[in-house]
Length: 158
Image (cartoon, rainbow, N blue to C red; front, side, top):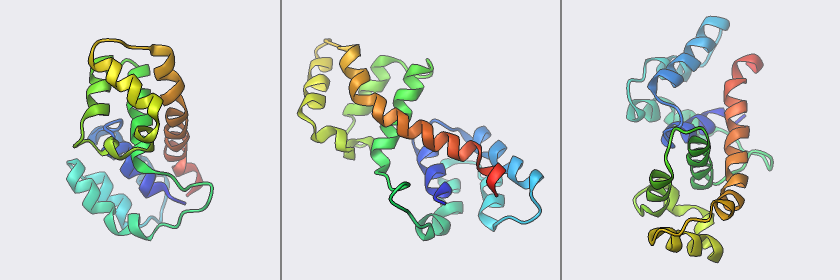
């Protein structure tokens, strides 16, 4: 199971804040007698940095399969798009994050697609094609949504 990597991605994207990851870990602690130490560390993590330190060892030891292998920057964009769809992020913030070269999403495979770059270049001058945006980002949001389901239901499978 790649749950720690999924947890890292959802936190790095900003989709989950401190309250959400702590609540998630608290649910695990309350419902299970035996858990790995990293779960307790997540429950007490007060910042993204502390959470990343809490899960660092487990994150690198998790084993991926063909079904769970993913490129984190793509899924981060998926979470951005989910936030946009949920009204938690405006269109301008979405585009600012997509064009920010310092953002983790800047390494996404999306940027290798000429149509994506064309859409972003047009957005810089105020031309936004929501249909094209949806077409390009929905597949990434789908993967993010699948990871969100895996995380939220993890405590049922432990």
